Length: 132
Image (tube, rainbow, N blue to C red; front, side, top):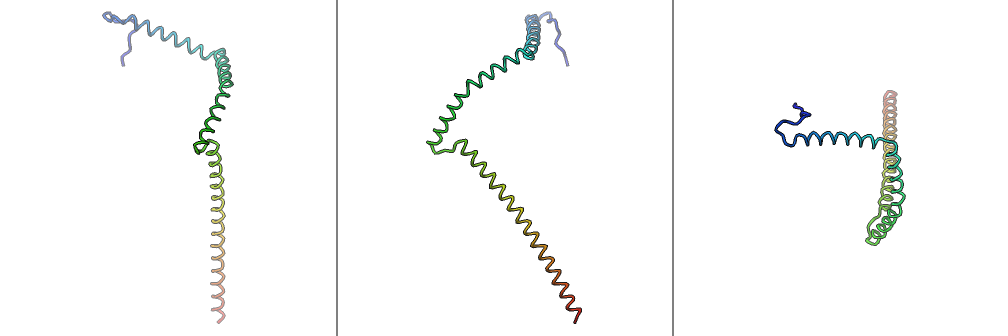
């Protein structure tokens, strides 16, 4: 790979400007990194975000209330309706899983009972045949 020389080429009219631009960008980059990583910047950003969130809450509530009213008038589900429906569906799914497990246990118990009953009948027949 070739590296770009620090000094401009002899016949390049824009060479000095490129070198100056690169040096300026490098200096600005270092200054901005130091500025953004400072504690003062962190505190100022934190305070600005806190103020923004505090001031935007009433607007968010107004928009949410308006949207709920509009959706209700259009007979469309609201976010609360969808959330409630999702909770109900999850509850139904959990109950169905529990019923499936119980049915599997009942099926195994019937199978075991049937097998033991079959074994008992077979041994009783064998004893009866042996007694004759």
